[in-house]
Image 1 (cartoon, rainbow, N blue to C red):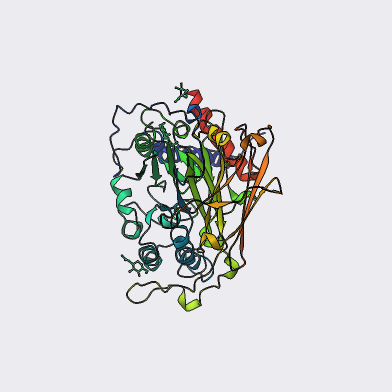
Image 2 (cartoon, rainbow, N blue to C red):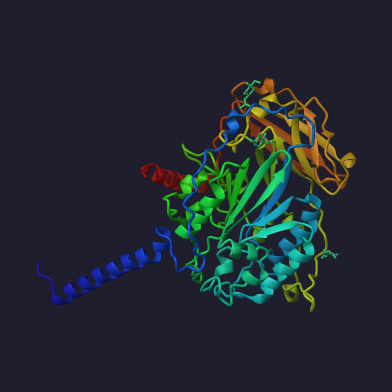
Length: 501
Ligand SMILES: *[C@@H]1O[C@H](CO)[C@@H](O)[C@H](O)[C@H]1NC(C)=O
Ligand SMILES: *[C@@H]1O[C@H](CO)[C@@H](O)[C@H](O)[C@H]1NC(C)=O
Ligand SMILES: *[C@@H]1O[C@H](CO)[C@@H](O)[C@H](O)[C@H]1NC(C)=O
């Protein structure tokens, strides 16, 4: 067969095109492989960061967990607010209800927003642009609706649409973001510590927006460049904390991660933090409160993606009780939330005061902290032996009513638990802790049991929470669906990369 001359020409063009594609890909991902000194967030890595061994919580002697309101604190994560000047339903109005009706009832230690603060789209939802009004609504709402709460935030892909770089005029997070200074001073990574009489806890945020934010859909993926990895290594690889938590916008499946100058991968870091909290994918998976989980043979750390505030009114309460971590994902009662009027999608007065919607009354929210939910156990990071030695079931109940006004029912494997629940916390100290006596040895039979708690408030609303638990510290397989598999396989890949080194 003889090819026509023009065929050779087109083959040549195709080959040149392919070469150019590879070259561009190589150049554009260079920051994932080596530190970029020209990046205005460049920081020379100290050479003396030697990763230390974790204190193995699994080897600690058990602490007797009883009915004292000690050794416990809790915080909130929300994600994907998408404050919008165009959308009357969901979006802004969900966030305002969260601030007005939920936050004052829960009174967390702090709130973390894992990105996508604004929607940054036009009316037709096709063109992206940063709108100052949306940013002003976010800033005013946090200032006026959460002014007694510590607040941490970060950028998501929507907050970086159309940005050239951090210095860009339209990087509005720089002006309106609550943690903009922390993020800038920390060159894309910042952290804070919660110091309690019973332990030290470390919280790390990483901005994984592409440094030169393209417009959508090209910034669906996040990046951890070598510069960023260097900073993460210095914040995370430490053994002086009971737990380290990492927050970013992107799940690891949608993140391209580089190596630190010393060669540490994200998989190496995963051994040193307990949970990676993220958002971004909204509601990808079915069931299980849309929790995604990742694990592998060499780390039992969890990756937990949270559903969005924008459409589902979702938020997450995380409690650390005697170093065991529990969480519950709750949706606002969105059927009770009427959309804003079309002319009120920017709920601001002329002096930037928020025009708050009418309050709603959500049902009581319950977070069970002992026994620990066996879908999310981390045997190397939590002292799970505490559960067997405990004398009481422990749970938090969040509601605006007094403890004496609540009706509490406890069911064990669908049977009424024989002991009454008792309020042992303190409303004054924001610790709504309840306990009830139990005998953990009765459940030490290598099978899975179910604890269900129902709380009814005087207005007739009932909140329910249920956890599967086991006494043998085994982690149950969770039915996370496609999302779980995707994240699992990615994490496995990160960890196998680490082994190849
Ligand atoms: C646990 O308790 C035993 C007996 O009291 C003691 O010998 C041991 O050192 C303790 N281990 C730890 C890790 O504290
Ligand atoms: C906090 O917000 C509330 C409600 O908007 C307001 O009444 C109060 O004055 C604010 N306090 C401060 C210190 O800004
Ligand atoms: C925190 O870690 C220290 C050191 O390992 C340990 O002694 C302490 O009991 C831990 N705190 C809790 C609440 O378990």
